Length: 566
Image (cartoon, rainbow, N blue to C red; front, side, top):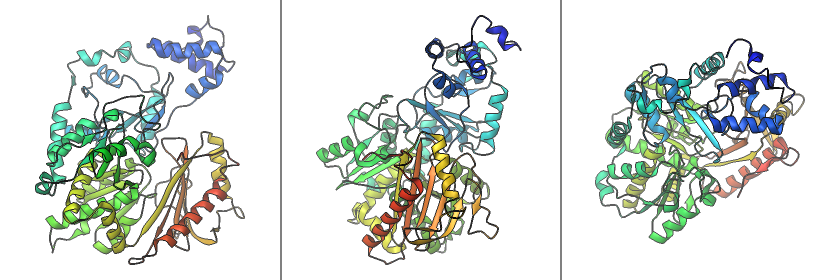
């Protein structure tokens, strides 16, 4: 390319009538060396598909709560040949020779002291999507200001600097490329032993476990983790054991959807008399758990169990007068407040972060640098981290930790459900509701949240379902009515929408846009006092508040929002 773009396309007439869009598509065609993706753009031009071309080329993607994700196709949005780009500039690259769980990349960055890490994954998104996660030298996902600086550098260096950037075979020939698979797997499994507290019980446990890899990468690594803990391998769901980008047996590759996507797992568990079902999402960084009689635990319920378990075993290893005040547990601000309640009673520390494990990872690194220990962290969307092996969520380690917790409780004649009830008796029932509405129209989303901000007399709602709103926190604009200066203590996130309400009856509710999918998510929670036993009343009140919140503020029918599939 020379300085005069038009000189390179003199023989080509404007295809869309939009000079800026024509310039962008011409740039792409002059740079793209992949005949398949070039062909996509050429077909769109021939068809006059201006809107689709505009969607692909008129703007760049931004880093959300879990990197970059979007449908696969030609355009400035899709990252390819990352290793070749780095090797073409003589940057040493550690390139795994096969699929690995996402937490392995974060782990490797820390282990090898790498400058950065990249994971190509769309996680639990639909099969049409792909994604690109970037990790900083700390092993945590990039967050502000690094994400903005990365995007700025991309825009300053748009044109590929040589044909070597398109040479996928460079990774096979370059002496600067090494495969860390064996070393990382061995090292990870060795460190995983630090989370194993009762191996002698595991060796003789009568429990049977079923595991689904959800057509992803988790199978071999969960099997190895079980062996490290002294368990026989879990029984795999054969239809979902091996990687399959079409997710052939699933309508949705997201284990968070519950019974509707766990059908094969639950059926297999019934047939082999297994009591616990474990399901890792396709890139094995998240975990769903079900227990016979097939209760599927929410992320908040699992967090209560795992938080209790990690603290219980810390106390076993550190009897009095050991002081837990330097211990931390972390959660995102849309997750249950159960860890906050535990912290008040047990003496450890608790902090909230913005949604997305990148913020938890960032805070973990800061706390570790200050000499503190993070014992457990979670986000309600079934993302968990036990210990501090990896500054990111990890479905592999969480799966085997849940297995050991179940095995231990079995020796006490307790199920996970019974232990959860015991936790709520001690700390108070924390009843929560989480769901979403689909909306793939950005102007509609903006209109909805703008209306909320001027709902009553030019400001936020003053009540909901008959309950007074006592606090509003709007992270998008940096407002928090509970603070003396009304400034939000969490980082401002202007690129996404998130408003939280605290009601006079103690319910906290949040509306926010997803950072990875076209969804408006809503969360609500009622925290009861310890010893309060009437749960049905709490649930009914929470259901009503949630119903009114969604109906009046989001107006699903008017805004053509699509509800969650059953």
